[in-house]
Length: 207
Image (cartoon, rainbow, N blue to C red):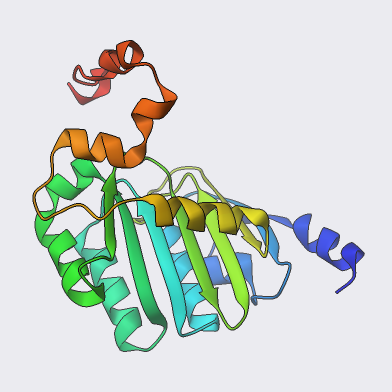
């Protein structure tokens, strides 16, 4: 594929008012899309569209929390053969809020299919049929009627970076501590302990 054709794809930006499938289009090598929505679709819709095209896909999802609908979507995709494997990277607070859903995920995708840490990233790796895609944006897995942005690239170094980060995350036991989640995230390596203490108090917006 010529560099000019790849560059043209990388320049594609759309305002999406309908569906993820329409915004993203067919999956191809070198594909890159930037989209802005008003909440018409979420990250789960993008993953469903991408996984179906490269099935059976190996998928990872980074999220703050997960709900029944998202777990059911992934179970359905696996039942349909669209997903071969799935990894969930979830914030420790989100995992504590929904332990039954985390358990369902592990029962479906394996005991080591969940990484619990401190996470606010919204990312997804989707690989299959020789294509390696990384989706990221402001959107969570669930629908949200607000402005959201979405980026998708195929074949870039960002895919490998996220894969390396996932491989570095330990598998915590069924009962874990906040300290273990902090250590799993490596947050203490990036922040002095005195600075981190500022974040231990309750969030202003959560009061």
